[in-house]
Structures are given as structure tokens and as C-alpha cells.
Image (cartoon, rainbow, N blue to C red; front, side):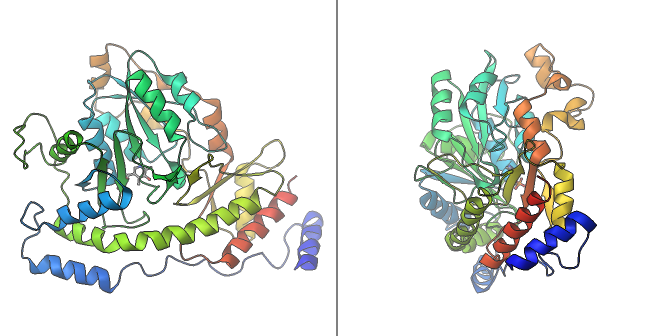
Amino acid sequence: MGEIYCRRSLVRVSWGRTALPVRTTEFPKRPPRFGPAEIEALTAALSKNELWYWQKESIVASTMTKYAEKFGAHRAVATSSGTASLHVAIAAARMPAGSEVITTPITDIGTINAILYQNLIPVFADVDPDTAMPRPEHITAAITDRTRGVVAVHLTGCPMEIEDIASICSRAGLALIEDCAQALGATYRGKSVGLFGQYGCYSLNDQKHITSGEGGFVLTHTDYDYFLAHNYADKFYDRYGRNVRLQALAPNYRMSELDGAMAAAQLPKLDGIIRKRRALGDRLNGELSKIRGIIPQQKPPGAECSYFFYLFRIDPRIISCSRDAFVRGLAREGIPARGAYVREPIYRSHYFLQKSFFPGVWPAEVVAGRSYDYKSVSLPGTEEAVASGIILDLHEGFEDSDIDDYIAAIDLVAKNNR
Ligand SMILES: *Cc1c(COP(=O)(O)O)cnc(C)c1O
């Protein structure tokens, strides 16, 4: 391999395109995810002749008990999506309309929408380009006297420095909500993500590690938070008889018994999925960090990642080509890669430049009595993370040989562009 490899890169320098890319076959798809366990669970749910979750021996209820146990939470509230779980948590944190909520400009738009739905104002903290996530000091720098909460997003399944962020929040009296949609199975200092804030929000959408089709759940740590979140996921119906009926505006984000059955059948598969992804991802991290000009997503000490996908970046001081040219170079080697998780920082999206969340007027600004101009937001770490980030697929269907090809191709393209 060494000889062909050198020759290829020499020829490439003088003539450009050569015969054999590093990879000539497709990468594996995710292995079969649904089987007898799911069929059995769904059949059992159907045989009850009722898909409504609030019934005796509710499947959703027993599934949530299993999820709470699995992650070490007090209780878990079922929701209809990850976005719903975030909205429920943000609503249950009861921040006054018009308050500022600090979050990251590199995330799924569901994170942001959950803040907007509650008439709160997203304030974007900068990120460390090497993690693509805010560090504690970025959160601190974004706090104003109008801040009431933080939504911390464990991007790619790599935990943030969540203990320090939790201390900042408790000192400043801010609600902390964790978005763990990409981080099922990730831990920080031995503890599952989602246990550090007031609420831990997860998605069970089809693309996540395990799925109920669509769905999500919120980890809670006190009875009070549980009942509040439960009510917020169910039109504020006080099904537990806690005497708080119709006290607040709340959507219907209920999970059906079919989704509950799916979620229960999928849970035992999580550990195997994480074990495999973690072994592959950690190995890729180790190997890529030896390549000059390549910076794998840095994980904080004590973090164990769940690798929703694989993120690294090129160091523009060492790699002379653009990120897009690097991605094209990988494509020529048979490696499908993409630029960063978001095409642009969320503050630069049309959505935020035009503030088109609500037609005509953004109520949160009216309540806040001030206007927020996202056109003037430019965060240097974020700009660098977005401009230099590259994403690769990585899942439990991959083998070591697939990772070998990633490493060989990245090494080659880096070598040709230093
Ligand atoms: C997927 C995802 C969400 C939203 O989850 P849905 O189930 O699609 O609503 C929110 N945040 C992050 C970081 C996600 O990856």
C-alpha cells in the first residue's frame, strides 16, 4: 500500500487525476434496525385496541420508566419529537416572555424554534472552533441582565463542559436545558448528558441513534418539574390530578402507544450501537490527530461521545486549499463528505436576518421593549468552525476497514494541500 500510495500522490502533483481512488465501493448503510422485537412490541400495542397513552398499563408510561432508569433520571416525559421535548422543557422552565436565552449558532433549527415558540429571544454564544460548541467562557460572555436561561447542545454527541456550564447557570440563576438529541448514550465524567441541567431533552426521530419513528422525551429530576413538563406536553391537562388544570397555554405533544412500543423495543439496542460508534470514532480521532493540518473535534476531558456523525476541521494555517476544495478532494478519493453541520451560522440565516419567525411582528421583541438586530452578529469562533468544518458519516454499520479508508484519504488530501 505504501508504494502505490506514494506514487499516486506524486503523479497527482504533476498530472492531477490518477486511476485509483482510495475507495471505490460504497460505504455501508446502517444495518437492519427493526426486527422481531419491534414487530412483537407493535403487535402487542395494537392488540390492546387503544393507542391513547393515558390508559391502564400504558405502554408509553412503562417505556418512560425504562428510559428514566436507563439514563439515571428521576422520571421522563414522552413527547412527539425532539423539538417538542425542547419546547416542553423551555415552557416548563417558565421564563418570562421577552427574556434572553443563550444557545449555540450551530445546531438543528428545532433547538432555536423551541425558544422562539415560547416568545423568548435566542442569543447566540460564540463557539470554540475545535469543538464547534460554546465553552463555559462563551456562555458567560453572552449573559446580560435580561438572560433567563441557557440551552446547551451536545453537538455530534460530544458532551459540552456541562458541569462548569451548570455552575455558571446556578450562580447566575439561569435555567439550564440540555439538548441531547444527538447525544443518546453520551456521558460526561461518568454521568449521562441530560442530567446536569433542569431538563434533558432527547429526540427519537428516525435519524437518531434509536427511534420511535418520530418522538422524544424529557428527563426530569424532581416531581414538580416532571408534572409541569408532563402537563406542557399534553395541553396542560392535569392527568395526575395535581390541581393545575388548564393553567397555561400548552400544545399537544403526546406520544402514541405505537411510538411508545417502538421506543421500548429500541432501547436495549442503544448500548451496542454506542459501543460500536465509540470504538470507531475514538480510533478515527486518534489517527486524524496525527495528520498535520487536521483537527478532529476536540472532546473535553471526561467526555465520552456517541458519534451521531463525525466532525473534524482543517487548520487553515496549514492546509492551503479551501474547505470546499478539501471536500471535493475527498470526493475524488471516493469519500462522501460535507461541509460543517450548518451551511451558515444560524444568526446569518435568512430566518434571523429577516426575523421572519412570525409574520409582521416578532412578539418577543415587543414584550422585551427592544429590537434585536442579528445582522450585526458575527462571532469569530463560529465563523471559523463553519468555514473549516467537515462532516463524515459514521455509524454502527461501519467497520475498521471503512475507517482505514477515511484515514488514508484524509491523509492524502492533506498531504497534497500543505
Ligand atoms: C434532531 C435534533 C433536534 C430536533 O429533533 P426532532 O425530533 O427532529 O424534532 C433538536 N436538536 C438537535 C441538536 C437535533 O439533532
